[in-house]
Image (cartoon, rainbow, N blue to C red; front, side, top):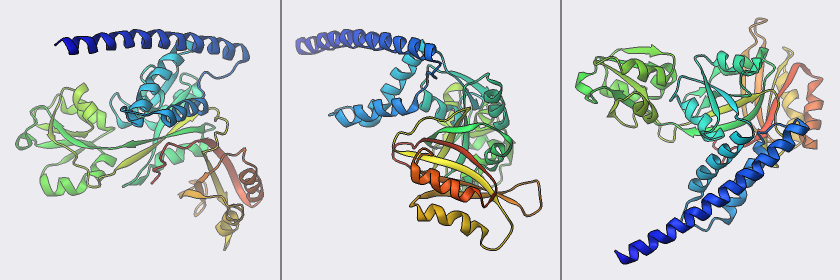
Length: 360
């Protein structure tokens, strides 16, 4: 026990050093916050936070993994930022949705999170100024794009200021944790689609009752002894449910991409993505003529989706993600070139790409 006690004393001494240094770091953050307020600069600087974490990961020699270091410093940065000015972040809720988990991953748990029961509600919170940022789902690697989110950008003036990638694991949760007692399942429509094969094989006769989110499904199931919910483990903890079946999604490596929305987008970091939306004239080769200047400029398109404009029959709006920042000269010039051939073009934002870009 003598050696263990000595090691524990060393840990206690290191903990005091860490505490001292964390408070010194927080004091510097407060000074920066005062300077930002005087100069009317936003306290949230994703490009700077990305630099800080990238530098730490580059110098990390272990045994802590880079992912652990990243998680620790997200919380340290979040806590320091809250001393400057607590960020208000709206998300598609209620509490314990995957969107909520994504928001915590991006902003840290010290932000002030505001749940909205609809995706439109997230946009409204940010547009009204009640929240500075919002987090909404945009696409799933197995089920594709969230059309409702795309449609919101048509009439909203909000911009994309970030993206978040979250691995999704769905579970069947109930009060008892006993599959044989489940008579009906509450589920959010996209979650049902992600688990379709498992449900058909294991619960073929059990009806599905639609819920507005995975967390709402868990909340309802928590008051129904014969009900179950498809949701994440965080919902099980919050709503006191047991795991009746774990990892029931059909496709493993199931990722959902979320967008951070705000009234402005950040400066370039050197590893950015730009999103635009546009509509074109209904004529042969119109879309090719729009995309050709981007190809000529060497711009890498990572996503293109189309949606009916809902204003005129057979008129479509295209949503495009591409590598680069609007401040990059080749990309800026290419967009200016294609603008004249568009009926409508809007730059939705330029923002740092997630680490290890896993966009579907």
